[in-house]
Every structure is written in structure tokens, then in C-alpha cells.
Length: 368
Image (tube, helix red, strand yellow):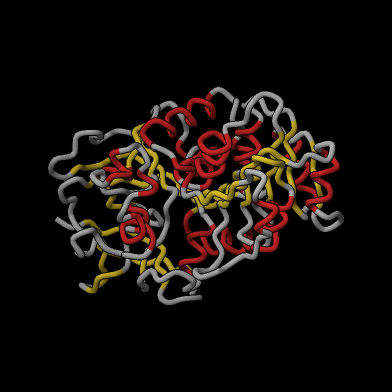
């Protein structure tokens, strides 16, 4: 039996989020109906809403949800009604990378999460007046009071933790954290640079503060964000509007360069600066996603001293392990995620979009 719920619908590329009643299909095999409590707003949502991604519109976005399971479909074994859950990305569970513990690199990741708008079998999860809408965004489409969610997008969490405080763990936070913990893995005394002090970048800073790295450099053009980065664990900051990033990093690392760089801005010019700031055998992790087809020029000879450029999706996280660990760190005060979050009622989603686009808030979280 279908469920009627209120959702934020984007009618076409560049159109605003408009609240409307939609119908959710009944939970099928491997699916659950979740009552949303909170949902983070991410730049990926804005990219799809703008028409910059080939996600089918009209549709319902949202991919940093948190809520309570209300019902489950056949063959669901990991959650039950009443469970508190954080919603993350979906994956097939059967391809080589999924079996190898790397579901963020699932063979069917793009259609299941970003551009398909349907279940893997092509059926629709959301409709309006009998007409299918784009849905199944990251296996959840959580900009709605209720969401039909893939079991592999669900992570059961401690019910004593406020869901409004942990919704961003499903995408932005685990991406920044994973860049540091799963890729760079800083050794004692190493140096790390984070390019961009938004939600992903500041998550990387907080993650770096929990490692043996002794030099953590945050780079941005906004002084207030650089000050926050210092409060969250950066040992140094660089204002990219006032200094050359590569030169500043070399000066702060005694001319050696950085052992690790996390690029979160999506700017190829910034990416190139990050590559130029690497130490021999250093690694640049590319997190920020520019438009499809974007290319960057690199100095090949400068890469020969063992430097690496690595792309990253969602922190290369295995969500069933990583998200409960992050929840515990938030609960214990060791990952002060609340410093990034501003809460907005669901009906104020357009205000949240404007504030995020204007840089007035780092991580908007919608509450239901």
C-alpha cells in the first residue's frame, strides 16, 4: 500500500524546492519506510537541482537523512520498526568492490545513487498524481517527511543520540573524515593540508586532529572559516586570497611540502596548487567534484618524485563500520560536528539553500 507524504520537489533544472504531496511505493524487498527526523543539505543536492547532473526531474533529492524506521519490506534483516537510522549511499552488495569492503566504488554506484532516479529494476519509488518522479537519490531521497530507503543505505545507530546532530554523517562528514583516515593515514609527525573550509574540509580538519599528524594547514578565503578551522584542530591557516597557497605550504613545512593534501573545492586551479604543494611521495586526495568532463593540467615531471593524485568517493567508507564509530565520536565530544550545523525547519528549505549558497552557513540541517 502506498504512503502519501510531503516532499520538496524540484520541477526542472534551476527551479526552487517546492513542497508538495507525493506518493511513496510500498516497501519492496530490501527496502524500509523511514520517518525523517533530519536531513543535511549538501552541494551535491544543489548540483542536481540546478540541472548540472543528469538526474531525472521533476524529482525529490536529499541524501543525508536520519530518522526512525516505520516499516520494512520482505527480506530486510538489518533493521526493524522503531530503529534509529542514519541514511547514506546505496550499493549492490555483490560486485567485486562491494565484496572487497569498498561499496563507495560499487560497479552500479552512479545509477543507484546519483543519476538513475529509479530502483535497479527500473521501477519508480515516488510518484505524484500517478506520474513517476525522479527518486531513489542515494537510495533514499530524504527531502521528504517519509522516505523509501534501500536497506544498504541504512545504518542503525544509538537511539540516545539526537538524529538532528548526526544527519550529515551520511555524506559530507564521512567524505572528509575518510579522505584523512582511509587514504592519507597520517604518520607521526606528518603534515596535511585541507583546501577549502566548508563542511567536507572542516570534517577533514577534525579527523586530522585525531591522528598523529603534527602540522594541519587549512586553506580558504573566508577569515571566519579559517578561525573555526583553528578551533577544530588546524595548527596553521592560509588565506588563499592573500597568499600563494603552494608557497605558503612550502614555508610552513620548511620547504619540504605537504605529505597529504585534501582538495574539497572542486576548482581545478586549486587542485593544481595542491599538487604543487606536495612533498616527495606525498598524496593529493581529490574530493571536490567539478562538472563532468572537467580536466586539469599537471606538471608530469613534478609528479615523478613519487607523488600521487587519488580520486575519492564518500571517503571510501564501509558505512556499517564507519558511521557508528563517527556517531560515538560525536557523542563523546571528540568530533564537534555541532560547530558546523545550522538547523532549519523543513518548510524553510529554500532559505537554507540561499544561506548555504551565500556562505552564511556551513552545513544546513533540515528538521521535520
